[in-house]
Length: 295
Ligand SMILES: Nc1nc2c(ncn2[C@@H]2O[C@H](COP(=O)(O)OP(=O)(O)OP(=O)(O)O)[C@@H](O)[C@H]2O)c(=O)[nH]1
Ligand SMILES: [Mg+2]
Image (cartoon, rainbow, N blue to C red):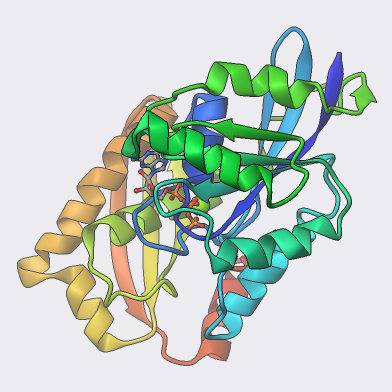
């Protein structure tokens, strides 16, 4: 059996987390149409009779405007240092832009096999795709240029055997049933954050953090108390909405996903808390035994 680590890297919003979920056939990482959705390194293990692959989803690499941006970029680069293959994703409809060139220059330094993945092929015409492939072949000696649609699961069955050709190890990395590096509480927080991102507009910053304060699992139900932490009262107002309508709607959508995950009834109590000061927020999280940007 072949095995190895494969990182999924690229600009924000190109579909990295959608690809991770599609390859693993489960919802592990949250996705949204807002750039900067993923903030942590999320690993998921794929396995079939022939291979075991640890896929590593990373935050989108972008021109940072604040410290959070710097941290996210750094995480994405670091998690591409200790892998065997890099899947470099671009949004084929948008084309290979300046940001992509910038990332490519940095990835080249790793001297690892780079597969250029052209995602969102469902958005362009076939002739256009062929032209683009010819154009991108000139950019770098990619070991493959591979068109897919992560959303429509187009061409994904061929992607695994393609990756497999470049896997270095013989034997499994994990002998036990390890599937991911993320904890249940982290996952719950992410599902809530996804609903916040999906339901609110751009004015709600990505610095929204969702944490589980308490989780009680019973035989036929799960009781969860979670807090959405924001840095301004105006953002709290948006998230709560008129007569708490937005918060309710976030709660309903999150609960449905969580019921699917736990396969039992979920009681979800959501609170919104304003913590303006970044340090105060960090110590609040630490008290809960959490570090927002740890992994
Ligand atoms: N049409 C189309 N949309 C896609 C495809 N793959 C992803 N998307 C959409 O693109 C948006 C971004 O997807 P994500 O998977 O969150 O992107 P990401 O690269 O993980 O983004 P960050 O975490 O912000 O770096 C979502 O709205 C997806 O539904 C695709 O193949 N076709
Ligand atoms: Mg993502």
